[in-house]
Amino acid sequence: MAKRNRIVVIGGTACGPKAAARARRCDPKADITIIEQGENLSTATCGLPYYISGVIDSGDNMVARGPDYFRNVMDMKVLTRTRATAIDRQAHTVEILDLETNQSSTIEYDKLVLATGSKPAVPDWPGRDLEGIFTLTGLEDAGAIRGFISQLKTKEAVIVGAGLIGLEMAEAFVALGLKVTVIEALDWALPALLDFEVAAYVEKHLRAKDIELLCGRPVTGFRGDGKGRVRSVVTGDTEIEAGLVLLSLGVRPEVSLARNAGLAIGSTGGITVNEYLQTNDPDIYAGGDCVENVHLITGEKILAPMGSTANKHGRIIGTNVTGGNETFPGVLGTAIVKVFDYNVGRVGLSELQAREAGYDTVTSLVPSNEHANYYPGSRDILVKLVAEKSGGKLLGGQVVGPGDATKRVDVLVAALSFGATVDDLANLDLAYAPPYNSALDPLHNAANVIRNKQSGYARTLTMAEVRNKLEKGEDFVLLDVRSQPEWDMQRIETRQAKLLPLPELRQRLDELSRDEEIVIYCLTSIRAYQAQRILDGAGFKNVRFMDGSLAAWPYDTVGAL
Image (cartoon, rainbow, N blue to C red; front, side, top):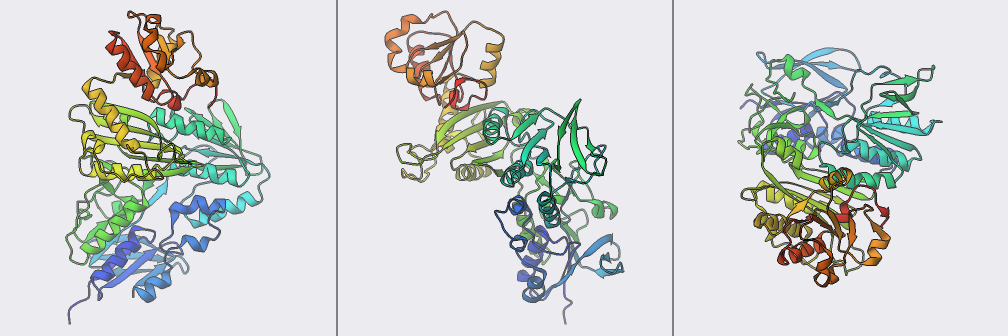
């Protein structure tokens, strides 16, 4: 009788159970064991903010598959409340500790899967151990936060870190009646995902929802109330009152078990794996938050702590530990997050990241509508594309706003995965009908803006460049080509400003000097670009328009839309 393949999986959140389930389907006779130190398997940790807010009303809904499913349906041994404490690679054994009885034992393996996940990044700040300071990694944390809020008298909540979880939790806390302050050490929200001007678009929405957002403010510690509870967050010489604090500073790979076993750890801090998700020990595989991934644009190793990535890893590992030969190509850093009424998505490289990676970039910033604006209910989105200047290869994209960002991000994922250029994107045969799209999708428009720049038809300044010129008091004309009613409703108030509506521009060219620098804006840059081409044709030599125009302008204006 053939020996059964002994597969041991350490970690029961996403990658581990997926690997185990795939292995069972590939090898119905394998001897499979899952080791998990918590009580549940397959917990939907990405949904925890919505459980805390009450959108998801029961913790039971957060468990996709319970231990009994894996025992009874999948015919596996499931050891919950059990911690793997050491790996003996020579003996092919794992030492485990039963957390209920405190008894140790060993389990043998032929193939071992490490799906140990990640742990929250928590600096050693003074006051870190005060009651009322939380991290959010699992159902136990979520339950503790819900219970603490229910008896909280001081309704000020401070979130340290304006990343994905931080902004999701800002919405959750507001839904529970808390006054929320978000503190970010870097200069804008979602700094690892978005460029400044796109983040600023999101920040305006956060402030409209009464979130106090403090960027560029590193936290240095916490103060207590004398009774062991947190009272305030210290940032520089300022204290911010807080009855509850959530630390949302990202996560770090949990690699202690792997490191102690002598497995290779990469420069990112994640376990080093090859394209088969094998470690440097051919009998040990690893996936999920604990491993390094290859970025498909740069080829560099990065961390990608996403449940979606972990599940892909799990399927591949399950195939390979049962004799398969499947590979994982890498990731694009794709992410999307709900920020109150806004959908915020990105893929690939931001402009800042692309430049840091050595690319010579060209970008577009296009405010648009999610579908034909004459069809009722169309909502705004803002699209930013990043491409390589020579050749126009797409490097990344960001899509934010109340409109449908998700499908645009997914289109960009497909385009970047296959090495598309802006020419390719501009000609994609995307679905069109007025309730779903405009005749040219916002992605088409964003690609065409870059093509216009490459051809020399379009010449632009970023909003930050225009703001810098204004702050320096430079002499130029900031030409608004909207209508008088639009000007009266909202405008950039400055001595350089001049209103000259587009329909009147050709007849009033003599009001502009051909010797002056002219920077044009409108609402979304469509009219501004047309005005630039009119002035070009009339012989004006120093004319550009502002990318994104007023719809994306993140600074102060007179009036409001």
